[in-house]
Image (cartoon, rainbow, N blue to C red; front, side, top):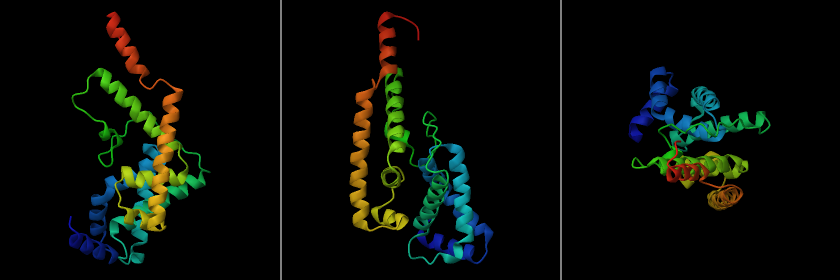
Length: 212
């Protein structure tokens, strides 16, 4: 959908055309769900927050003035809905870290996906994915959120600025600090545990000719 088509849909939706709003939902539902999932950490909460975000968007359409793109405006609504809920729960996140990230948009697993992976490589890849998910979710709120918006949702610096309501300089400096914090968190995890323990077991059994 090009920007002019989207603008027409937005104008129709603002005029009360439900079908136009449904078309917008269809365009963005995967990205909305993907962002909600990254922020909440589990599918049930992500589904609830995505629905809440679309309700907020529909009831707030009259306030959309086009100062930013509709996409950026919608991301800001999703982000705020998730933050409101997480704060209401007093920052006690309910995370399903072992659950695979199976959404099409911004899928973390795609960063290491390799159809040629054998059993050893698949085990190692899954373990690394799990450690990255844990590390991201354990970062402080500002660092976690900006990493999700930039590195997983692929928002531009300008879009992140509009979503978070901070300056462009703050976006860049916070992102640098967040990446450094993630690097340190991963280094700590790798030092505290044997990263590829499942694969090591697999290799040892293969060498012994044992069964898995």
